[in-house]
Image (cartoon, rainbow, N blue to C red; front, side, top):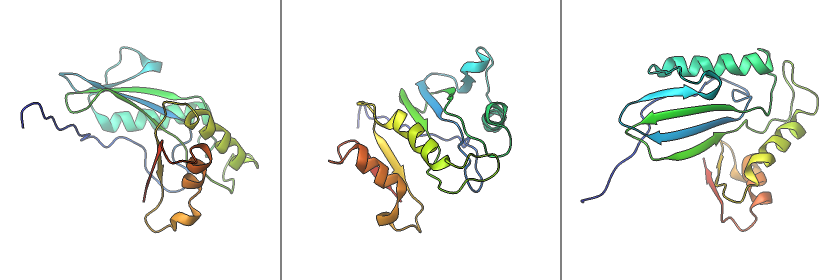
Length: 161
């Protein structure tokens, strides 16, 4: 069909692991471009064509601000990904809800993360993607519960197992 374009992300660069992996908001700007690379705002001008290095820099920058023992911060990491395979779009990856502190996390970790999430998801132009584990009962999903609190009519959120 003329004028139809397929856009897709073919890079795996978000940190992975068990427990709380996203410990700072990651503001990810996808920018349609003829070349493919990433650039962090805290390192303006330094281009990352290797997306394994992008993952490492996200991890290192997280540790610089939060420490390496599971601390959290609401100070975002800003990353731009330039690629011919994306639409111009901004996404924000936020920490998941947690109730039990681990490592250097404060006793009120649940309230701190909830406050951080609300700082971002209450914006009028925000679309909330509430991600839950496929083996979790959606009726007990903290992400979906918070999305419904902010958006009771379900106009701005999508739940995904």
